[in-house]
Image (cartoon, rainbow, N blue to C red; front, side, top):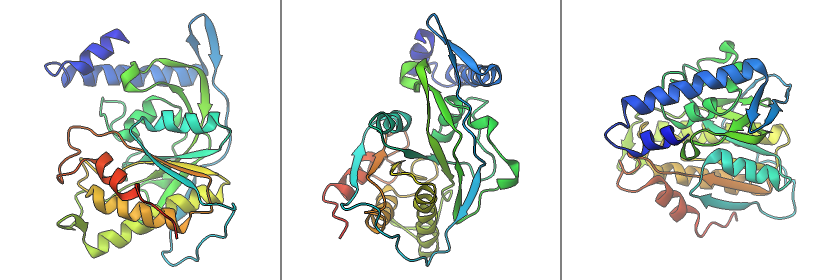
Length: 282
C-alpha cells in the first residue's frame, strides 16, 4: 500500500509505474475471486455468493413517469467522494443502493487488467465484476444499460492503496456507456446526442427502480476523457431526478475531478454542484 501511494503521488513515476501497480492489483483481484476469500489482518474473509443474472434494460424514450413510491422527494446530494464509498455508506444506513458504472461500450471493464485508470476499471479492480460479465450483452445498447445484481466490493479505493475491506459489501451495479467525443454546441450537446444521453440516463433510473432499489449513486457520466460537457450532463441528470423524485429515497452524485476534468472550462464537481444547489423536483 505504501509503494502504491508513493507511485501515485509522484508525477515523475505516475505513468508506467502506476500502470504496473494497477495491473498488479487487477491480478490479485482475479486471484481473490478465484479463491473466494482474502486475508484481512489475521482473519480469512469469505466473499459472499450473490446470485442473479445480468439483465439488459433499454429506454424507449417515451415511457410514462414512474408512480410515486414514497411520500416525499428523494434527497439529492453532490459529494466529492469515491463512488464505492458513497454506495457503502448508503448500505450501512440500511438503504439498498445501485451504483452507476460508467462503462466501455465495447469491452466490459475496459483496460482494467492493463492499468487503465477510469472509473469502470477501478470498479473491476475492487470487486468480482469481471466474473459476472456476459459477452452476449456487448456492445452495450446505445440507449440502455446492464444491471448486475451480484457485484461484491472488497477493496478500498486508490487513495487507500486498494487495501482489502474488513468485510465485503454487495452493491448492485448498472453499467451505461456515454457517447465518446459527442457533437457539441458550446457547452451543450448537439440535439441527437442530448436526446440519446437523456435515454441512457432514463435507462439507468428505470433499471434501478425495476429491481427495487431505493437509492442511487451516480457520477459525471462521460465527462472528462470522453468529452461530454459536464454542465449538459448535470442538466440531464437534474431532469431525471425531477422525473423520478418520489421513486427513490436518496440520490447521491459522487464526483471526483481528475486531470482532464476542466476540458470544458468548469470542473465536473463544480458543474454538478451548481446544477443541484437549488434543486427542487417540482
